[in-house]
Length: 438
Image (cartoon, rainbow, N blue to C red; front, side, top):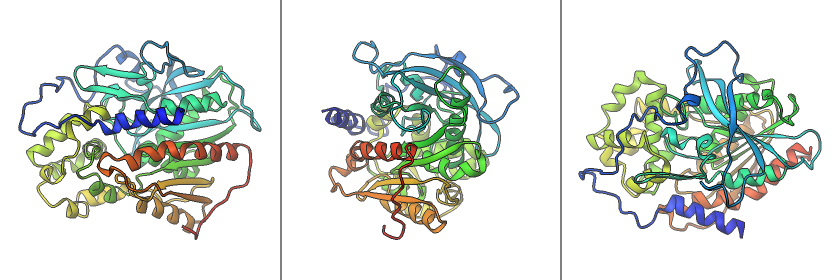
């Protein structure tokens, strides 16, 4: 029953059926007049980093405060069985510059029933949007976020977090760069997201008053955008955070190659994520801004401006099922192989370094948004480097692919088995790599 409820929630979030996208020439009465880079609100004081940042190292805590954890706004319909702490910590962006990132630490009420000290899962959230109000650390205080008229978000990650903490796992979930904090969220940026994951783990282990062993075991978890962040953390850990005791990584539907993802999104319910990705590139690599803008039509510029302040449900409602071609001045299938897009997208490709700990990759063969072929290639690239990889293919047949059902449902269908795989890593059970067989 829990799985059915979760599936219905995801369908409501990602399907958004019944909402008719507006013609691009129409005025948009729901467009909010705010600064899309940083929304000033009641959370602004916590989410505004000190300027300059205090001295320190990646993973050092900058500030913390208690965080109210609810499944819905009233807080009456059940609760997450954990104490929440909102954190801000130091990390490093894709250019090697120090940055502040926020997140949430979950201290479970239940004991850890497995072997060894309580384990820590560093959780990379899936696509939430690009507006600051979409940051998971903000959404856990609301469960369901809404402001007029279409700015609505359901914190679907709480489905797994609630289950994980009930089983005794400690969780720290990062918001990534620029989601909640000043600056635009660098969506699917390989290095920034991987570093944010690794430093979230470091920050959680330094948090006073927890049940964690400061040198205890750590695993990475994520699906979709989170799967890419987890995969990046797995391969960057040895060089960037060798102090972490990493025992495994679950990377579900990782967007390992943006060149393949770009045309997959065309005409789907989630076509607006292309706007997130381009905005993220503009934030991380401003030297390429003019060359990118030269490839955009006025309609493309409008897409980037609007999605910069939106959460995913609003982006779906306003842009679903549209084709990408009217947003660009050139053929989109050629564009990804031309500069500046080709080089910038290549920078985000995952699979260039060997993870030192075991990895489980899950992908649906008929995923209409994050291609199975790129996830499969990621696994093979890691295998070629001698990594311990288990690759699992979900064979759920194509179903309403423009609604991205074959991307959303495997998150739930494969989640229980993935959670058991993670538990096995903490309990020291031997892995079952299948390199050479997928």
